[in-house]
Amino acid sequence: MMKFSLLFWPIQLKGNVIYILDETKLPQRVVYIKARNYKEAAKAIKEMKTRAVGQVLLVMYTFLLSRRQNIDLAKVAKAINATRPTLAFKVLTDMVLGWDKNSAPLDKSILGFLEMLKAARLKQAKDMANLLKDGDVILTHCNVSGSMPLIAEFAKQQGKRISFYVTETRPYLQGSRLSAWELMAAKIPVTIITDSMVAYLLSLKKVTKVIVGADHLTQNGDIANKIGTYQIAVVARYFKIPFYVLCPPPSRLKSGKEIKIEIRPDSELKTYQGLLLAPKKVKAYYPAFDVTPANLITKHIYLGV
Image (cartoon, rainbow, N blue to C red; front, side, top):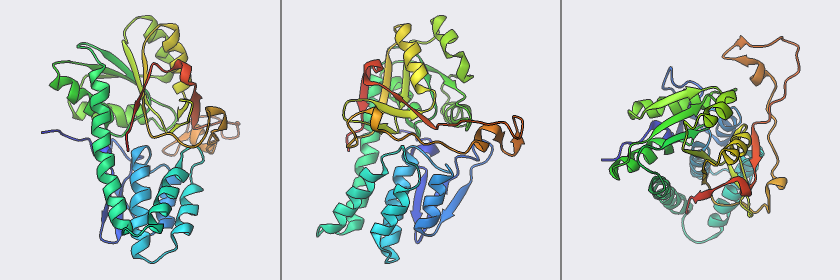
């Protein structure tokens, strides 16, 4: 029986409360925070309490909850679209608003979409596993919400043993906190490296493939993903190492040049869990994402929803 990481489906709607796995507390504690309305849900997205697929789930459950509360869904969409500019939230919110205009009940459309999303994520992981070889050593950056353990499980079913290197992924440490945690829980060999070790590691031929996720895919195949992805793609190309991307459906944007990059508060770069990591008054620059052009990507592994 397939086992799923908690990060695979980190949001649940129970009654009139949305339970959100607080990813900022992992791996020390498994904590769920509660959102009782669309404003609290939008706040959780803005504060990165959930990310990656968690944001998609939270958007869908927020619309479901808001309909029960008789709240104007256009107002909900506006609040969600204003949270994080790099992610293609408008694709999701426009889709839901379109469903609402049709005759079918909105809850049926949303729940049907979520079932398709779950099946599509499983297929995407299996498609990626099909491209792996026994003994592959994979470098991944950031965290793709439970996908890496799934890929490893499908590979195992095919008689392939794989292992991982994960970047720590500064400053939120999604690699060392989330990816390493879920891979270890699934008993998959994993080693953490700092973000600055990638070129040296690849030069030693310790990695055979790179697999990352994407928060935004444009029409021409460019992607936006966690800051640091672009430089990994450049180094992978230099060392002739395949670079694979687990992609969401494309947005309406033509290329990565049109993606608005989210600039987060400099305090997030200078502090971690209340600990000051740099001089208090020093300037800091924290773009949360970068854009990797399509010509550096070996293959897009699409999410078919």
